Amino acid sequence: MSAPVPRRPRRHDPGRRERLVEAALGVIAERGVAGTTHREIARAADVPLGSMTYHFASLDEVLAEAFTRHADAVARVFEERLSAARDPEEAAEAVVTLVSDDLLGSPRGLVLTVELYVAAARDPALRAVTQGWMARSRRALERHFDATTARELDALIEGLVLHSALSTDPMSPAQLRHAVHRFLR
Image (cartoon, rainbow, N blue to C red; front, side, top):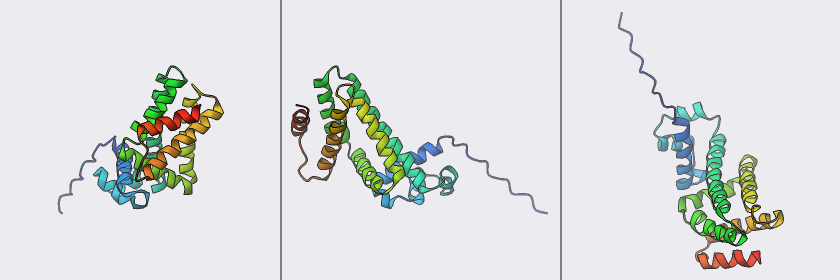
């Protein structure tokens, strides 16, 4: 009778799910939603492919969690910038900084945002992520502006980001400032 083959000890990896979500964001930024697969995420996270199905019921679940993490991070920056503003004039400058530095200043973040917008146009679960993000943005803007102005300014921000992301001649920070201040007159 041969000796039993000892079982390999299980690797204790309590941060694996988090690593998979971060890896998913990296894959989305690099390959787009269309190029994001379980295999690519597992490879990027340096884990066995089976970890994907252990931690997530579907690729849609991974995408929703990854995009929620991205939206939460951007919304936190938005809230911090606007809560630091003492009046509507400073809030307008905070919006300019948010657009020019935070949203447009990170190529990875910009690609993730555009990928989320496109994916949300087709997927109701991801649309819920964008709706939550917009609600947080509006609440932050409502610290300084009425609800109607906050909603319209939020739409202007999204339009400025998309316009700049897709333009071969994006607006300068001075042009962004002019647009925001002109809108708020």
